[in-house]
Image (cartoon, rainbow, N blue to C red; front, side, top):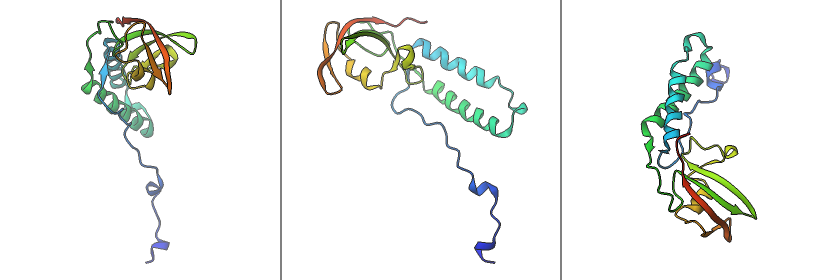
Length: 156
């Protein structure tokens, strides 16, 4: 029989389901980030997938695999000394004439709208190792950022 007349299953036309991509590089976490990751795993493990639709259960299990991987690979970083900008620093800085404050945290803990950015973000990378009072280049502008204050993030 010709392939043209063969009935294809509905499964053949479904998009493949991929795992949630892991951010590249190390999985550094603050104490808060580690706590949030543990809480996420515990919350997902507590969900009864038997009562869910099959597709929803698959999505939940996929998310649980992601968070279990992130918990297993988490590297709790020491609290920085606040002498220079580092992972786990709270930085007050001036950019374009405006004063701002950010926390430099892990990829999964980052929430830019809340002032928490990933250590892998361009802004955080530009500030790394800078000291209070120092200016650093950013976005192609020399001296675009002035570091005003550095402190260590404490558990929140």
